[in-house]
Length: 146
Image (cartoon, rainbow, N blue to C red):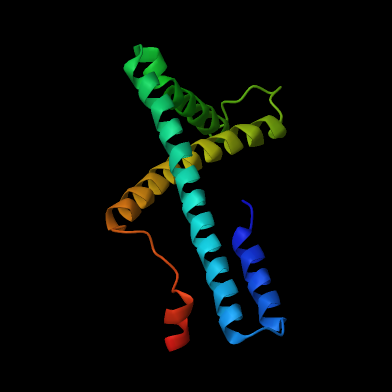
């Protein structure tokens, strides 16, 4: 992901080195804080849209035929069965260790993606519930009071 927060922090550090009035520094810092809030909101909106699109694909598959709804779990179960058979010694002699490693990588990727997508969906859902209003950075006048 693009490190926009690091860029804005670096710009804030540069502003602190300029020989300008404190009011101008506060105003510039306030504008940078607003940019960071906007960038963070855009990143969250993007992530939410990506998750919604993924969910719509899975939903469309689930509403289709039985095979369309269940092909992912079937593939994962097949790969897990192949791995179990390999560990129990029921493996053809022409299967290389590299092929077995690739199957294991696919299983890890499938399980990790499933768990991560569930967790990310829950995080965004909870974040949206708790977000009453967007967080606004302090104005230069408010920042001057601290």
